[in-house]
Image 1 (cartoon, one colour):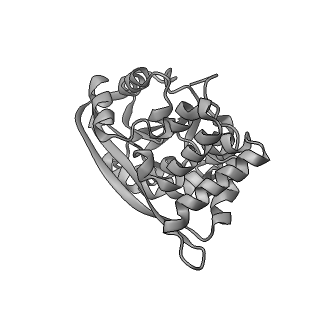
Image 2 (cartoon, rainbow, N blue to C red):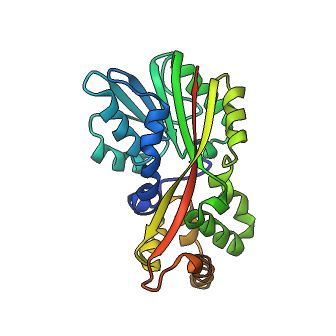
Length: 264
């Protein structure tokens, strides 16, 4: 993933928008990987480390967790909360590990950004032992993730030439597509499930603050807009959230992820 999409900008703000909600699916991810005490686990595209921390808790003192991510700023945030994990700045499509050294692998919100999904999954498959477990989760289709899909659409209206980049977040949101990609990479016993969680913001201001701070790839795109573009994006988002907004300004929405599990 090096030199293509950057995830460095807004690393400190990431957990105030994406990580704040994506961690709600981490328990499902850990269960899907069937993590056990003593396991050696690789968290691919670890980001700010929510799944890494959960894996550390699951494998206990006799286990080991390695976290790999292409973004050094993201890994620095992760290290503050997961000091016991081993960190590696690494491209997921060329993992710096020997064959068959991990009992299990995790990937939370990373697969959709792999420039070559087949190559990335093949690398993950390579570093897992025979019979190893792999679990991943990705955002569902954009319309099933209003707080994030709406932002992608708002940005795309201002920067239509970037629509494909903004839409990458949801490119594996159809469960059958994710299942097919895993099977094509040699994984077996592939299972996928949709899981929804409530997403609540105290106000529109609370929602837009981390976006404006550059959280995630979409926040980075928001910061690239001029004042007129940001105002137009805000207006689109306010209209989108209107049906979900109570009289006191609290925004109640629901977001969905696709959670997959498989074996080597």
